[in-house]
Amino acid sequence: MTVGSAEELRITIPEGMWKDASRVASAISAARSVVVASHIDADGISAAAIAATALERLGKDFKIEYFKKLDDTAVTSLSRSGADLLWFADLGSGSTSRIKGLNAVITDHHMPDPEGQCVPKEGQMALTDFGTISHLNPHMHGISGANELSGAGSTYIAAVAVDGNNRDLAWLAVLGAVGDLQDQRTRRLEGLNRGILATAESGGFVETVTDIRYFGRETRPIHRMLEFSSDPYLPRITGSDQGALSFLLELGIELKEGDSWRAWTDLSKSEKETIVTALKQHLRDWKRKDFTVERLTGEVYTFRREQRGTVVRDAKEFATLLNACGRHGQAETGLKICRGDRNEALSKGTALLRDHRSALSKALAWAKGSGIVRLKNIQYFDAGDEIEDTIVGTVAGMLLGSEGADRTVPMIAFAESTEYSTEPKSKASGRGTQELVARGMDLSIALRRAAESVGGVGGGHNVAAGATIPSERKSEFLGILDDIVGSQLIRKARR
Image (cartoon, rainbow, N blue to C red; front, side, top):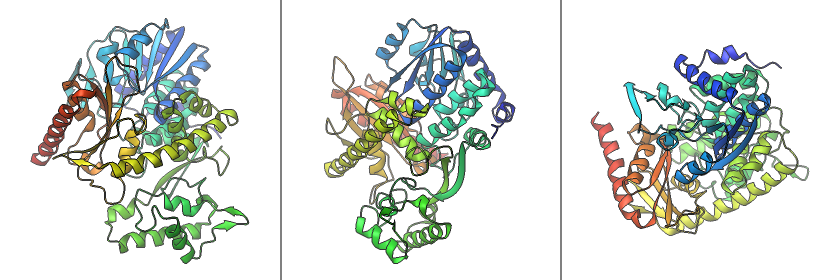
């Protein structure tokens, strides 16, 4: 199968954004050696894989480094690398004031650093003269980096600008977008992501179908998939092995084929329809709103060239695998998997995924028992050293989506920062809902401003963001954050 032409992808990208991509591409092509700095999550690892492949095809000398955040220590380390060019992928936009003066390119989707920014017209940002920095970011063109283009997507557009033949890497940008939950708002990829998806589909890399959206379609027994469902939560089924089994048996679904448990992808079309119809009725019987019932199904993305029944076949499962690698200090393993290692790296990654699931399960149970503190406009829990700072944000999101959770305000989670520092630091992770975003909440702005007020750093997206702050100023940070979120919601209501 042939991949859609570079021109077909090009016409989906705004002119100004393509010019930015071309400037980034020129800097990459001119460099003899490049250090790629990327984030440790699924989007960042996917972006790193795109960058690595593009650089390898150019014959460049390159190295990949991974960071939880881009603070002064990280920037100082990178500045001493001796490379001709620093390529910040899925990082950098929130730290332009820190990297000013370095020979660098940025392919990111996080909210840009307000320092040095001007706003020429509503919904659009532009950098002032940063001299040696070329910057590609959807926010600079009025496009949402939370829903319409991921860090891997920005990196992919730059790679295509470098060489149109790199359009075959579109599947990695789809993987990054799904890992960044960019299909969550409308239950499908949207914005510039759709042009990238179309390229991946035309090349035979990705198949898109409407199906049940739960995790584990390829690898979990059907009843396990339902037992661990969360979006939407299934009363008397979620969290209950017996409840899930009983539900399926009452529908007459054969759970095994010989001695093997059947996965969702093993079912016939009619069996799937029977289960989905019954689940929707189950949710209605429990008085769930239409919005909740609709979230049961949506677009799902399958990597057609991967073996059926494997963790790398389904985009959501593959992305979780990458998160497991990155969150547990093995981002390089995730990179190798993205670049085709289906032996040692995949085996190691699969083991990390098992550990990751176990860690999340234990952390969620701890968080539920710790007691959530409710302020006026936010709620929070403090895990201290009980939960790793690399997964505490994921736990906050899971907690916010669990049965009986208060979804009227965002969830903030604290954990002790494991990064070296002369003074104790705390990691703060915030998670909200699309309903709160619609009401005016922007956690990227809120956490960044609150963190800077207490001598910390922060940023991210409107629905999910993070910060690192001095531990002794946690109470002050919470008070400021509570006020900022409150003012965001009030301003939106007044408008």
